[in-house]
Every structure is written in structure tokens, then in C-alpha cells.
Amino acid sequence: MRNNPVSKVVFVGKFVIARQLAGKLMVLNDGEGLARLVDVVANEATGKITTLLAEPNPDSATARRMKKEDGLLSIPYSAVLAVSDYIILDKKAIGA
Image: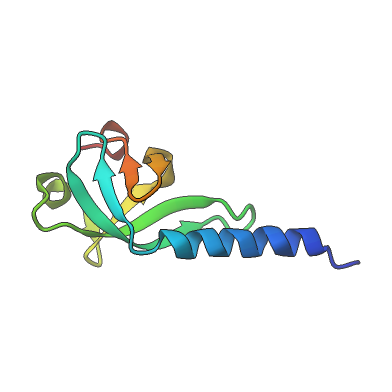
């Protein structure tokens, strides 16, 4: 079987994107500051991000109500509306 350099480039690109996301603030679509991104979980077969793991903002009422695992919020990637300086999340999609 031949090595496929294109698949390596895609993987590296996704790794770079994940590194660029680390530490970004996560804000709900109503403006509430929810958390700071700590890590991402990806499907090994597809390489697609499935879940965002985030350190909750102690001042966020929504974050205080959400279930935490090892002190982190687990947020489905499907809740992401936009990514720029902040990660914007759909409040309804995270069950808040």
C-alpha cells in the first residue's frame, strides 16, 4: 500500500486548527461567557471534532448548572455556531 501525502496534510491541518482553538473563550449566542476551551475530542476514523472540553467560567450561571466531568464541561461540537476571536455556541443546543 502506498503512502498518501494528501491524507497526512489533511491530518496536520486539523491538528493545526485544533491548536488554534485551544484557550479560546466560549460565548453563548445570548452573550454570556460560558467557558474557556481546554481540549477537543475527535472521531479517530473520520478526524472530525465531536466534543469540546472546556473549563467553566465560575461567573456563568449556565456553566454552574451544566453537568461537569472531572471539572470540565463537555459540549457537543454541533452546538458551535461560529469561530473567530471567540467560539460562539447555541444555548439551546447545549441544553441550557
